[in-house]
Length: 497
Image 1 (tube, one colour):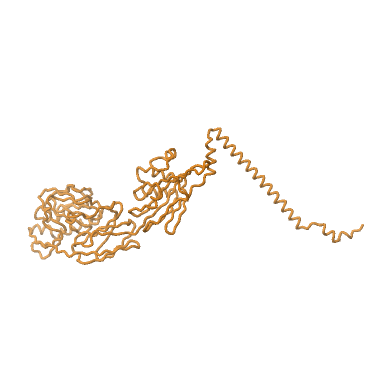
Image 2: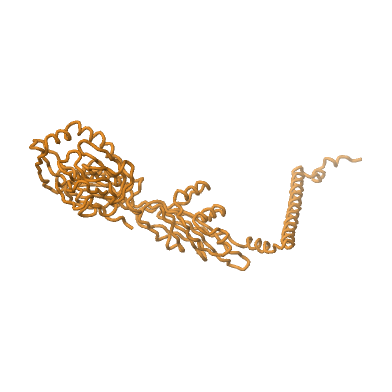
């Protein structure tokens, strides 16, 4: 046997290279995986067809054939369009709210139940019997971990609100402060500009009618916020004023969280408080001791400043010399009576009602209103070399005449003092107080609420009083102002409506 051919080159060519054997193995495994995947896909298709047939058969047997059409429409009905909100430098694209959360928001602002709206097919949301306040709205947001997209509006209106696709019907609410405003189009939203700053929440419900017979109509609810933070605007009641009068500052677009800085040669300590629904107010009394002259005054809030030139006029106050029984003067005007007055009255001066209760023109406190001594008079008693300033007006009246509250407020002091006799002090809000001295009787107690014209006592001659009369003061905190100004003209203009 010839074996030499085993080592010939031809024998080597008949052998399969090792690398070719590995490649074939990989191809066989890949083909096997494809066959397995195809089997799995066929199984899933069979299960899907079986599930669909089961769903259809069950719906027909149970009499719920409409469920089939609903399912088909759901497959071919597109998602609700997004709401596009733009302002300077920002753009938000927000999706519709989740159904449960949307319903809780809508229900909080509607008198009709959601079921009634759905059954009637009405797109309009009925206005609520009671407005939803902002705190309740914010509690709903917190409960659902929802932070609405917010656009800030500082000066001019810059917001642009539109849908990717215009809805067939639209209704909704603007919730601002205590107001709930019904809207029926986006124009009302884009042009909304409230008198007062603060957050405004927008709730919109949109309906899109079906675009094809196989589709169903869509209904969606959207929510966002517009935060109005416009620069404050200040106004003053007078640019020229006498000593002993009241300066009043009014402010638009100012909120309770804003800080107002004042730079002035006048002793102004301004605290702004709400005045009506749309603005704020601050009272600035000027003492009868203020020096005449021009005073530049600048108010700043945030990045905005506004300046006023205020002229305090030169006013000559009268001088009066009064002769009274020396025993009366000695008993009622001494260090002890002065200390008693200071000790008991001073704590009252800081008490304030947070809102201005003063309404319209004041009521005359007694009939006749014959003035015996004017406000600010420099008075000398029994030729004493020392004088004092008269803090109010003395009004002539018969003993026992009724004394009436000049305006509404709360009684913060009712007591007999050696110097001022039977004394009542009424707080009218923001530190504005009326004082009644020398009464024979007091009919009110501390804490009582009084209305304009209520009887609070009777005229007398208690304390340092030579004859029966009523001494009437008007003050803001510890600064006395001329009471007659309030009777001659309104102290305050009407709040903006």
